[in-house]
Amino acid sequence: MTTPIAIQLWSVQDACQEDFFGTLEHLAEMGYDGVEFAGYYGRSAADLKAKLAELGLGIAGSHIPYERLRDELDAVIAFEKELGNDYLICPWAQFETEAEWIEFAKSLRVISDKIRAAGLHFVYHNHAHEFEKLGNDYILDVLLAGVHGLEVELDTYWVHHAGVDVVPYMARWADRMPLIHLKDMKRAPIESTEIGNGVLAVRRFAELAEQNGVKWFVIEQEAFEKAPLVSVEIGLKNLRKMVGK
Image (cartoon, rainbow, N blue to C red; front, top):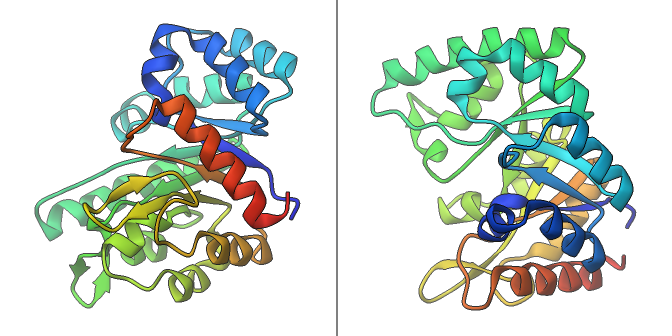
């Protein structure tokens, strides 16, 4: 396979907080092809761009809180364009009522139009609760069908966690999925673990994603029995073995 592999930096957030650039250096040494941001730890776009170039790391995207996308979009777009990031990702949203989800979708339409007008991609990252229903449809389907140009960073772990069959769901939005989150699942207790050390069909998900033209595999892990930097290196090595890369 030729699809590059990135790390979602939320997985190593404590190390990033302690020494952001040192952590990027460590991840590059492990063999990661790129990173997906979850905050910038006070660094400027210019400094980040220069550091990534020095390390040979690409940018899979950036998780940007919905509130910033809603309230500070011009500044966000300017920063991301200077950084050289093409994928602006809404990482989380949760509401109690159908009316609130509908209003959220309306807000995403405005955000999507402006991001795409700037020549960038707008992407939504799911958890499990987007597979609850609005009427007869999953919340995630309502968002993707109702927001023109919105793409999805499918988190395969959370799709499975929600009780949805991952493979046919991947096929449903194959042409709107430039990024995919790959993580593995422990059976008991149910929690994320290193890729290759759990029960999910990660190899199959990766194969299908590549067939569908995904731009980046993104490794994410949310729970740890080892040091996070140790775990994400294990995950990288195991994923590379799975995909023959």
